[in-house]
Length: 137
Image 1: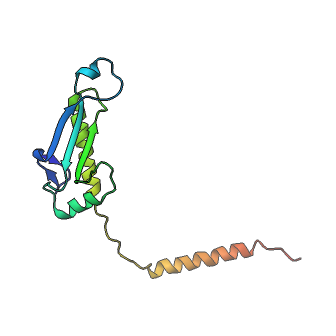
Image 2: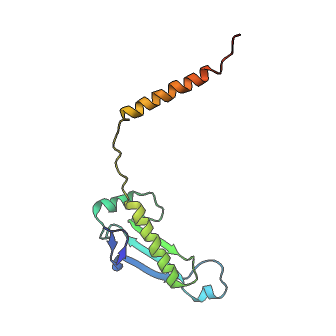
Image 3: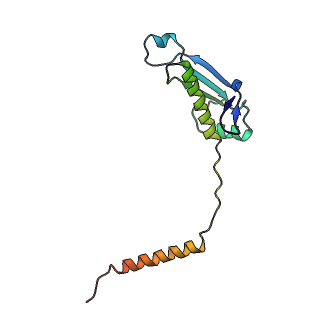
């Protein structure tokens, strides 16, 4: 099981992980060892509820293709195990960020005391500014 939050978790069979050869510098080792991880997560076929699926699919993430599959490549580290952990952590962060719902704002009014304090501060400030004027002798 891959745990994202208290109420969200995924089965390991929903995430397809395969090892591929990493790009970039590394000498002869990069041509021999498949240390990079290619992670695929089908959002539409996942066990997430419909609201979470639509939120993830509507996000403007370039890692989601037209079929609704989240594709991720992890090749930052030298070992396959560490790249796999990194890929799963990035998937967890993507799902957590995509399914987060902002709390609705409740309109409130300032209290009577807060209104009185604001007006008192305005009158005090006005008196200070009035004293800055020219002095007549």
